[in-house]
Length: 357
Image (cartoon, rainbow, N blue to C red; front, side, top):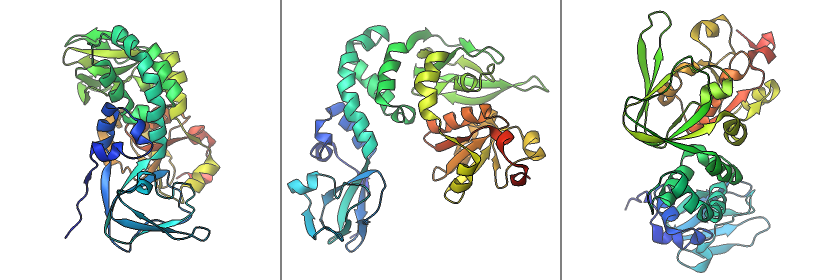
């Protein structure tokens, strides 16, 4: 009989340590994102020396743990030993092999610690959030959980999220409102709590306005000009009534930009290229064809939002431009979308000509 992959149920997740300490709403959202993985008898769950940052839990069946310094030990699903992660020390001090057909889940350990830390912070902010953000009674925790489970906020240190809750300012908007225009100075970063916003761009040659993207609840915009320290490259107009959360440029740079950007120098890039890394040139096509890094893909910053589907989430993308300004904005957008992304420090100005074509 074939083994089926499915999401974990909340009751099972709640029985595992340390998830048992998480509140029910958090468990419900977490359970929807964790797939049960079937493993055939004789297959390895992990091997001694592995380091993947994942906590592995046995949901059904029997496994054996063994290693050079670890005596063999059998773990049966449903027993107290199975409520703890299997061989949780990293690098792994033992291997795990399935003695029967088993089912397991793998959970990112940093994320669990993040959720546990957040749970201690969130209750203290409930009343304040409900009052400051115009949230109806009973909806403030749901809003905060939605924030936490977004790819963007999962990458931020917990203290930064706590500080963000103190700095975000809500604004009620109506359909047709222009949040900012192309060419305006960049002053704020925006999160969409409710409503739909349309991002458009005016073409230089024809002056025609083209739609770039449509964003809904949970999405954000306005970061490009703040990171690159330029004027707005797009126009954002509300298509529906809604509510936005604003964050000033200094607060954005201190609380969100710095923690999310990973910088590499040229030597580090050369090492990374031997692995699953792809260079991404975010300049305009004429700039790219004048000179670029070998094997680099060209995806201009102003097209990035609309072309994310062309990128492979298995790759680590190292973004570059001439100086590092545009590429920093691109790496931020990629991180926001759940990609692994870095920035080439100094841009092409720092690259020896021997690496350019």
